[in-house]
Length: 255
Length: 266
Image 1 (tube, chains in turn purple, cyan):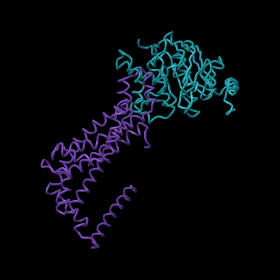
Image 2 (cartoon, rainbow over the protein chains, first blue to last red):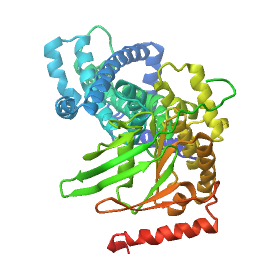
Image 3 (cartoon, rainbow over the protein chains, first blue to last red):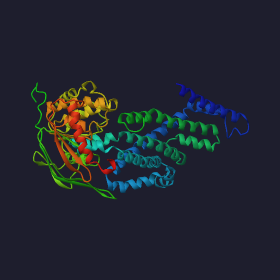
């Protein structure tokens, strides 16, 4: 409770500082609108429905791209962690491509797919799958070998061992990989929405982009806050509790 | 399995280790872990392997389990060559190696699921009986992280016994426990061994523990790992680890053991 109060005070202080800075008159309100303007924009955007529509469009894209990226990434990660051949091939490819910032996929996606949903999906998948593959691979490799030994003495080999021991043992690491994948997918999608201009749906990235074109700084900051809030909520409400639960029960990590 | 007869156990196996040698090669050196080990274990005998670290006692256990293959020599279980791990020779590890994603009940049933033709009902009954045997039936729905170290080893014991193996191999099963918990487990293991009659090989570096539990204590020395001496222990059971006779025998074995310690420890 004390911690929550202090954290709350910190953010109230931050907003107060911002308000004071914009009231001081040193910076043009076009560049630094007061928090009240940003709040006013957010309220109007909620009221006219544009914020909700954009959020729905964005989250829909995110879920599709993220689900595909995680599915491929988990598969690749499990492949590279169990086979030396895949480790030497796909593993190296994943290591290389995960260092590539996802914005770098956009020119290629635009040339291949044009200004389409497919281009956006492609960027999100590429931004997600490689890091998920790496995280999964690392996790599956750190499983204590004693589990596999115990399973073998009890007559569990091959697929039975893989499905009843290796997979559940690596679950906490898979969730860590999924959490990392979520962060990467979110970044990729925002990059894609800013650069890929399409008519099939305006997402949060587009609102941000148009905010810049219209010099509407209250909109730019307001949308940025929404993007941060969505990322934070997903982490705090979905991934972190799930991850902590698994690490505690599995006795891995320092929870 | 007829009702009322709670343990229709399969017969314990006899084991025969024939001239087993093992080297471990690293980039810097080849370690001669075991050098021509010969060992006969009778049906239902409880044998303890003791020796300083590096004498290859855990390696020998792994080879008997079939988890490691010897470089030369062979292991026979009931005159069958051991070619790999199997549920007739179950291993209990120092670190319980229980699966944290399963409940206690699920862990005890793990090995049973590999037995063809066993129904779900039978599996659950067998698991229940073994949890009663180790006194943890109340905790059957608990998860591993909720148990103490001693409870975990009890569950591991139940898990190893449930598939009714013919040989039980124990790799320092009590090393990580506090003294009081250990004494409790010595009593339980003796009671269970007397009712279930398994052939048991246990590795330990605690001589008293070995004398307390075993029919025969086998002393190994390192560099290379060899069997040096064997002691038949014919104290009546159940044995109390704190009894003076037991302490006296343990003292004699320890004195011999000291002679085989590498010079840097002596």
